Amino acid sequence: MCQTTAAVQPTAAGMKAFGRKTPSPTSSPSSKKHVDYTFPPAPATPSKISDHMSGILMTGDVTNTLLEVLFISVFFFVPPHLVPGSSMSPFQVGMFALAKSVFTRLYNAFQEAVFFAFPKGRTQPLAEHKLAKSGNDLNGRDKKQQDTLVAHDRLTLITDSVLNIILYLSVDGFYPGTAAVPQTFAERAARLVLNHYLMSFGMYWAHRALHVVPYLWRHIHSIHHYASTPLSRVTYQDHWFDNFGNAVVGQTFAQILIPLDLPTFVFSRLFRVAESLEKHSGHSSNWNLAHAIQFAWMPFAQMPHHHDWHHEGFKSCNYTFSSMGGVWDWVFGTRRAGRAANEGEPAGDWATKEDKVLNAMGRQPIVKSFMDTPICVVLPDVALGVAAAYKLWLCGGTVCAA
View 1: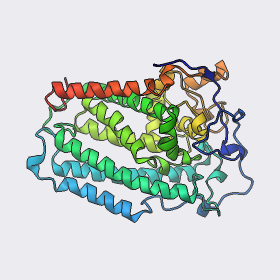
View 2: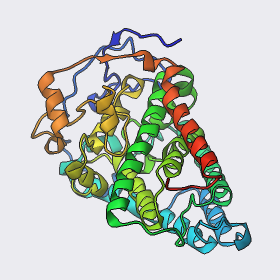
View 3: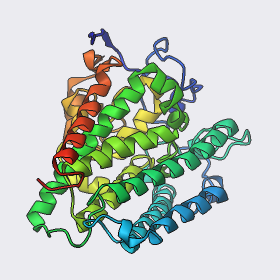
View 4: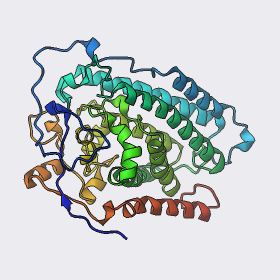
């Protein structure tokens, strides 16, 4: 049964910006004393580029790179007679997978270069990203954690690739082909917005469940939170099931329930990659191209400083779960202003109107509701899955616009 729990105060315990020891991701934050956030002064000694930059264009794991090349190549060699009639051709889906991979690497390199080159937009003290003699990487992760992430990177690549191959071969139209009925610009725009908000809804509840269900936090999501000071490279460095679950409840359910045609599908996937990389980039500025668009046009938009703040607090940061617009944090009461607390501070110029409303209200407790119980928090995504399966059944196993 779903029970309502008492209100709890969020904490920012263990934030590295204060020079305090970071707690174990699996530990409970309830005993930590609350500390209000203030941005630390810039270091007196300028940093050298060699202190911060590394190989960010290509992965350092040769095995992972070879696996990715192998799985992309699979699409090019799929026999055409195995492809459902309304889907992309093997060459088209292979080129899409290749373009997505290249775009991810290039945009990651671009975001990390921007972090180093434009200090005004940084949401973290630069000293937090120095390579440590202890073996910690730029994001505060020790050698054991790095090795764990390498293993999960490989498993993520394998499971994500297998999921995409299965969807391509078994669900007609999931990867929309050029033969589909063309949509007008207005219909494309409307479908894109609705598809992204539905995608964000599924990912919001999955992310919230990963924080509030002790087992999911301890064994799955805490691995992503090894990075207490994220850069864009940490975006997909999760437990493999974390990435797999997001792919299912996010873009898979959204494409089945509100399908996009070929041009909109390609734009949506690349835009989503850009948004994800920017969210972990450690800076908020006009160089966050996807977030700048959201900031200008989407109500309740969030910026990278919101998610950066979420990472600093580990499990105590049970807020700011949304991707793609941020509306669901506002609807369900889990939004916080994060680093945009005051104009003139780093990220202050990117305070949204919702941030300013929250600042005017003062510090408010996060009230844990019945939806934060282990059973209830997964119900929205279960409902999405049922709706997606029912629609596939109605459409005879194909992705249909109706």
